Structures are given as structure tokens and as C-alpha cells.
Image 1: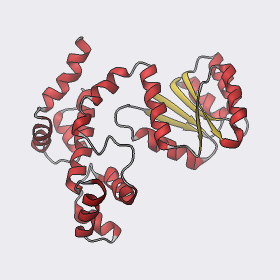
Image 2: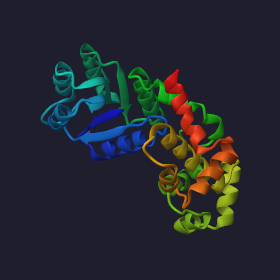
Image 3: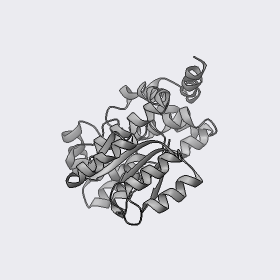
Length: 257
């Protein structure tokens, strides 16, 4: 799904972009713009499926952007960003057919729900349903947030699972002992470091097998943090009792129905 985020606050742009790109069950290509004029330039070059825009911006307001982009059919769906004190102003976008809002500071769960709803509305239901078939094998990573005491460790793991990461690396990075981290993962989430890394790699491998048919199994293995194809094969067989080819066949079978 092609997404454009428009906001004059750099940290808002970065936060939204990072959150959207982290949603595993919806494939999004995200671009950003700092004002309405820049957004129109990007849209005219390449229209998008979803535009997320702030209302108050310099040079060209969000309402002006929505009006101009809608007339030229440069987006399929629009979500408005609004502060609590500007919500009534944002509601004026209704006359342009905008029905969805995200309030600043945005809530991550609300954002994810909006993105998934947009994907479903725009025809990506099949992708969502395919990934959901494997949710039972991903009990921790399908949750939107880990327990609070684990968040910084979990974020580091998400950013580095595609490399040769270890519990020792995580402990050294934060100046903790391996034992204390093991106890914390067990106490807060009833899991282990290795279990979470395996879930992250499994989720990404499933996604790539389903939606990136041009990648070989060996290439996917490298992308999720393994040195050999055999390691990925073992993970899929142990967790799903499936081979990489069988996972990939799930998508082909769905297309044939």
C-alpha cells in the first residue's frame, strides 16, 4: 500500500513512518512531506492509496491539500491528523469525504487499526487474512506493545534480529547481566530472549515467503538473520511443521480460489 504522511513536525513524521513500516501484516511503502506544496508535488508524480495529513501547516494547509488532491484524484483514502484543541477545525474535512482522524499525540494502537482498516478497505484483505493464519505461532510479536519494562530491550531486538544478535549483546548494550534479563523476560512476558528472536524471524520469514515470490529461500534466510537456508528450514519445520515451499504455496492456493 502506498502511503504519504504530511506534517510540518519532523518528529511526528518520523514516528508515524516508523510505526507504519513496522506493521508486519500490511506491506506499506511510506513517503513523507513537510507541507502541502511538497505533498502535492509528490502526489502528482505518484498518487497514493492512503494520505495521512496534518491540518495546520505553512504555505498550504491540510484542508487545501485535501481539496486539491481530491479534485485530481491523487489519493484513494485520507486520514486527518489533529490536536485535541483543533478537532472541530479538522472536522471540516468531512465535506471532502474524510471520515477518519488521528489525534495528536497519536496512539500507536489507533494508528495500527487505521492502517489495517485502510488496507482492508483498499483490497488488501487477502494479505491480512493470510498472515492471520499464522498468528497462533506468534503469540508475543502480534501484540502491539510488550510489557513496559521490556520495551527498550524489545525495540533493540526488533532493530537487530536480522543480524547475528545474542543475549550477551543485548545485556552488554544496556549494561545488564544476562541472568537479570532472562529473569525479566520470564517475569514480565513468560518468555525468553531466544523465543522472541525466533518469533520475530518467523514472522518476517512468513511475510517474505507469502508476498515476495521473487526472493529465494536463501535470500530470505539471510534477511531474517540466518547464515544458511538450512537454519530457516529448521525454524519453519519446528514451529509450523511446514517447509518454505509449503508456506509459499499458501499464497498460491489463495490466489487460485
